[in-house]
Structures are given as C-alpha cells and as structure tokens.
Length: 608
Image (cartoon, rainbow, N blue to C red; front, side, top):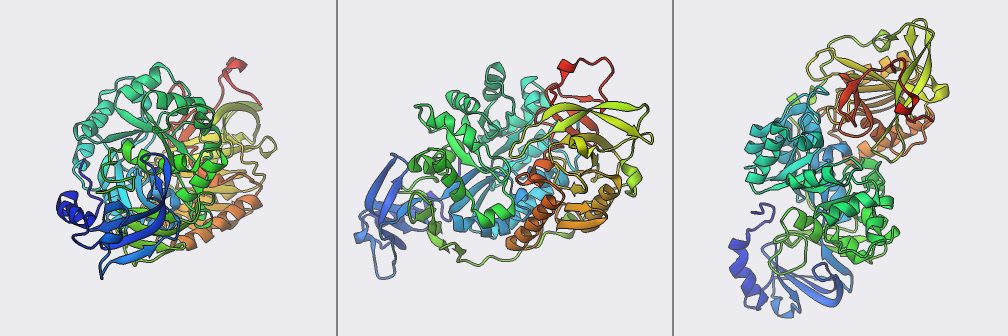
C-alpha cells in the first residue's frame, strides 16, 4: 500500500538516506544518547542515536558520523525514544471539535497518527462532510488517515439519516489519498446473512487492496465470528470480555482494546493478555471516543498506555500496541510504527516508562511539540456555512410533542437499562401508571421517558421509549450527538423540560443541553453538523465540564453520562435501542412495541 502520509516518498528519499547513513551527506537532525524502545524486538537499547533526513530515518545506532555543520542535534540524555503513537480507531467528532483542534490536543501527548472513521459527520452531511474533515486535517502535522464510513445508516431500515453510503460511494473514496480502508462494519447482521449490498461495500474495499475495519459486538465467538472474519474484516474494537478479545486474536483478527472517555473496557479485556501466555502482535490499544475534557485533563494514547500498565501489561508491549501492531493492522508497517531505517521519522521522547510523560514529539523529523505544548503554527480552517445548518425539525416542539397516550390503569413497558462505562445495555421492563390517559416518566423507578426526533429531512418521524440507569429525579437532557444517525435525542422526567431542552438545541444548531425546572443548566453548542464546535478545544472542554456538573446537579453520577446517552439510539448494539422509527430489538433485529403484549412470559425479560 502506498503511504501518502510521509513528507517524502521513500523512492525519492532513498539515495539521500543511503548517503546519510554512511556519513557521505550530513543528516538534517540527529537524536543522540537515547534509550531506544525497540518495538521490532521487544527490548530496550541504551545509548542509541537516530539520524534523520527528508523526514525519514537514515540510521539507528551511532550517528556521530552523520552530523554536519547544519545538523540539528537533539540530546535525549538517556530518555526513552519510541515510535510515534497511533490510535487505530477513533471518531474525532466525539471530541466535539474539528480535526485541527483535535490535533492541537493530542499531538503534545505523543499521538502522531490516527485512523479516523468520520461516520458521525457522514451520517449527517454525507461524503461532503468527510471531505471537510480531510481538508481540516491537511492543515495539521497529524497524520489523519481515513477509513471511509461503511454503515450510513448503521443498520439500514431501522433509522433515518442525513445521508446514505453504498458500494458506489465506497468505490469512489478508495482513490482518495487520505483513505486507507473501510470504517467499522457495524452491519454484522448483513455480513452474516450474506446481504449482497453489505458484502459489496466490503468487496469494494478489498478490491482496492485496503483494510476493512470491524464492529462485532456480539458475545458469540464461534461460527458467527468466524463468518465475520472470513468476509475480510481485519480488526474489531467491540470486545468487552477477555474471552472475546482472546478468541479474535486466536483467529488472526486484530483485537482493538478500547479505553475511551466512557467505555472503560481495558480492565476486562487486558486479561486476554495478562492471564494468557500469548504473542501480543494482534493486540492494539484504541480510544474509539474521547470527549475534550479527557484530552485536556488526562491525555490521549499516553493516558491509555498508563492504564495498560495499571492493568499489568508491560511497557514495551503496551507501546507496541500503539505503534507497530497498529501499523501492521493497516499494512503500513513498511512506513510507520517503528524506529528503523527508511521509516517515517515519527518519534516521541519519554521521560520514563512509568508515567509515559512525553517531552518531545517529532513528525516527519520535525519537532511539533515539546513539554506538552504544540510548537508549530496551523493555518485556520472554517467549515462551510452549509455544514452549520443541519437542524431540520418539521413541527414546533412543545410539551405536547412528548405525550404518549394510552388506555388503562397501568401499562408494562420495555425499558432500556444503561450502565456507566459500558456500550451495551439490557432490555428490562417496568410497570408504569397511566396518568390522565398518558404514560409519563417514573423517577421513583429510575424510569425516564426518551424520544428521538428525525432532524435531517423534516419528516416529522419520532420514536418513543423508556430508559433506566441515569438516576435523574427532575430535569431533562437533549443531544444531537445520538449515534449514529444523530437525530435529536431527548430524555427527561417531565415534558416541559424535555421541550425546553429540545428547543434549546434547535436554536443552537445542535449540541447537548441539560435543563431543570425551566432553566438551562448546561449547554454545549455544536453547530457544525450538530456534532462539533468551531471553538478551541480548551473552551469546549470548559463547556463540557459545566455540562457534567449540570448532570450531577440533576442527580446523575455516571461517568461521561452524555456519551452513554448518545448510544441509546445506536441500533447495532445489544440489546434494546431507540431510533426515530421506534424501539429496535438489537439481538433479533426487529422493531418491537413500547408496551409489553399481554401474556408475554416474564422469562422473556431480565427483571431487576
């Protein structure tokens, strides 16, 4: 695979690199006296120099003969030198900023490359939105490699999105310089049922010789997982149990072990490594989703490396999981992921291997960050005006909008039960009283009304459900970050606050809001596609921090609750989800009614 992400192609640099390595031509930069984290051989090598020319590594060893009068010499002083970190699966939009601001946040933490799946903006704005992300990325030194969104919509027939992607669109993007593969194939039911359209999407990627990334969220690890891998899917980030990750690695699939802002899977999935004597070449550390406060307060892959160490993974193995393993997954290890002659000079200096504190970051041989601060200027980028007008609600939103009329004295309903730090949910049930001929929230049972309003085409479609787990006693939350269709999602204890939260976001052009007793307690405006802010990442982080305080004020103690909320509408995750078309049973992939039919067996549900 040709790599378009190095400053100079190897075929243009090869003569110079050979001359520099022999001391015939001086290097542009030499890093001296480092302790090399050799991810090729899983060892530490002391007192190693690295000579760099034309953005690539010319020599690893003693580089004293490569130094000329114009050579920049960086004294490492025994610090640890490692390849630049790469995140193998990330949705930049979840950071609520564009790629430029995302790069500003993560590069100082050692991140030199990301494999981003921009399916959030694609669901709203189509490939034109993805093109905006690519253009935004080009102004940064960060190597932002795109995997074209594969599932827009995530599960066809169950939701309404702003756009749709099929085999023809996939074929067209495979020629883009920034595209290295296919975004997570969430439609695993389509793969397992041999759906022609789904396999054609995968097929276009395979014909182009690029990588198909996966999303197999079922706990099953037998015939279904084998079928999914056999279709050409190379990696998966959806393991939540050690046995799932282990089996994927045993079947030659790259198991991407996730530790994001809300999805704290590493505690469980790290056991696939720490409790088994296995080769870890098929293990990759990824974030999937990070909100801005995590990036500014904790870091990015450096934070995930620290978490890996806490779970008992040794430092060199952990670093392999964000460098060479990731590069091999995407068949880019001939260019990226190791400190070796000919490779791109994407490097990090670490003060030690316990804190993983990054002191310097180089991309293509240029120092781009030192001591936690970006050292290069980036040109400004403004998203086009058409990308900021994505709220198309047909009808005026009033408290009456959220009324669910029913008959009888009480009704048994299906409930989506969520949990902090988890992507899956459980289908439970609750008996709700009928008040004035309608169903309302029942905070005493921790059962809140939920609604999803279609916002892309003004169709007026709307789905109702109930959710448990947020512990809200009074108030409402609304969000246009509602995976993956990103319609308008509203949850609340009362219809008045729900209407205010929804209308607040309509006026803001999208975002997230928390309301209580007719007052807006927290608001993060996200006018770019209803997903991202044009503000600097630190300002967005402050807004998100205030939003989290608002959640706490209305009673929620969940970690990153707005990210858990955002998955309520994702119909490719078990067990029960809500879209603008209604409740979806995500184990059988069919719509189910809100009310439990009379005579349904209690064994059909998991009760609290």
